[in-house]
Image (cartoon, rainbow, N blue to C red):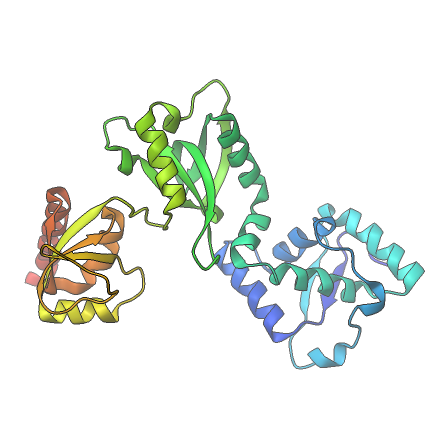
Length: 310
C-alpha cells in the first residue's frame, strides 16, 4: 500500500532517467521528485494501462540508480488508484509509476513542455480565444502582452507562445515576440481589455503571417544586409545553429542554403537573431542595414575594444 508523503523507488532504464533529468534542468523544476509528482498527479491523461502487459522484471534496470521521490498531496488520487490495482490485480506500485513515466517521455519534448506548464498554457490560450491581454512574468520581467497562438519549434523540441506587446510606437513586426513556455509565470488575464494584435488589420495580418511562417526568432519579412569576407562566408556555411536564410547576394537571388565568397548578402533575419548569430563573426561580417542594428554592433564592438584596450 502507498500513501501521501511515502517514499517510492522506481527502477528505470538509462533512457528514462536521462530524459527526465534533462527535463528537470531545462524546465527549471525543483528536482526529479517534482517532475515525478507532476506526472502522477495527472495520470488520467495517459492511456489506461493493460495490466497484463506491464513490464514487471526489474532486473533489466539493476545497473541504473532508481528514481526516488516522495508522493505529494496532489498524488492522493493516484495513490488510491495504485492501491486498488495492487490489491485487485497484484500490480506493483513502482511498475505502475514506471508505466506513466515512460508514457510521459514518449511524448515529443515540446508536448512534454506543454504538459508540465499546462496551467499557464491554459490561461494563455483562454485569453487568446477571448482576445484579451494578460500580464505575466517572463524571465523575471513583468510584461503586458496579448497571446496570439501556441507553436512548436520545427523539431517539436520546444513550445513557444507568440505574443504582441502594447508598444504602439514600434513597427508591427517588432511588436511580436516568441516566448518559451517554460519561462512564463504568473499569468493573469485582463478580461476588460482588447488584445493588442486585434487593434488594426496590420497587426492581425502580421500575427497570421507569423503563424504561417513561424521560426523562434520571427524572421519572416525582416531583412538584414551583411557584408561577408571570404572567411565570413566560410564561417556562415559552417555555423548552422540559428543560421538565418541567405536570400540574395547583391541583386542575385540565392537558392542554396550556403553562400559563395565575399560580398553583400541579404538575409531573412530579425534583429534579435542578428544580435545572436553575427557577433561570432567579428570583423568577417559587417552589418550594413538596418541602420539601427549597424549602430548597435558598432557600440557593442567599441565597448568590447575598450575592455581589451589596456
